[in-house]
Amino acid sequence: MKWSGLSLIPALALVAACSSQSDEEAPQPEQLTLHEVMKNEIDLRADDVWAIGNAAIDENAGIDPAKMTDEDWSDLAKHSLDLQQAALDLASLDPIVVVKPGVKIADEGVPYGDSAADVQASVDKNPQGLRDMANVLAAHMADLADAAKAHDVAKAGPLINQIDGVCEDCHLEYWYPSQKALVEQFRNQGTNDTPK
Image (tube, rainbow, N blue to C red):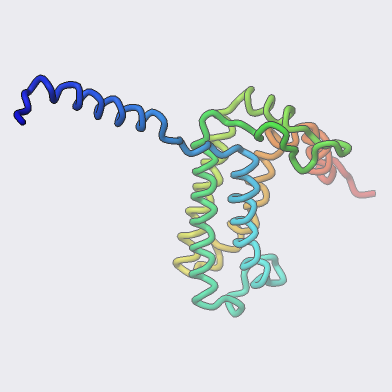
């Protein structure tokens, strides 16, 4: 039997159609939500960093070098880089979707708590601001990783202590904005007090 070039054309067209169809049908990975990145990446990685800092805390809320081993410093650098990557993951979300349908966030339904819809509205007002804050956290964690690699107690202690403030600034803008005025009131309480 002899094949002609014309008889191959339908076969090649069929192969091409099938392969392009399978490329179109290949499932795309589902984008993570802000809630998933916060809960499963950022929160967990921050806890890892704080666990090391808390175990080595001194009387001035810094790091006691006598309580840090080479392994602790190595772990601190690793966990700091893990948290940096989590922050970069958050910064790369596009679009930023707070939760999947039907998912509630931690403070939803409690006094002064914000709903997922409230958080989404805050994010939608300034999504780049959220990305910028995530990048600030990423840079902060890179600095902490560098301090840990150098076993620099003077830099590492304050950087660990400042993580909470870096996180809180973003949380007040986006995660629980209804609490911002209350937190600001607490923060400013000591500044206007005069001794009696």
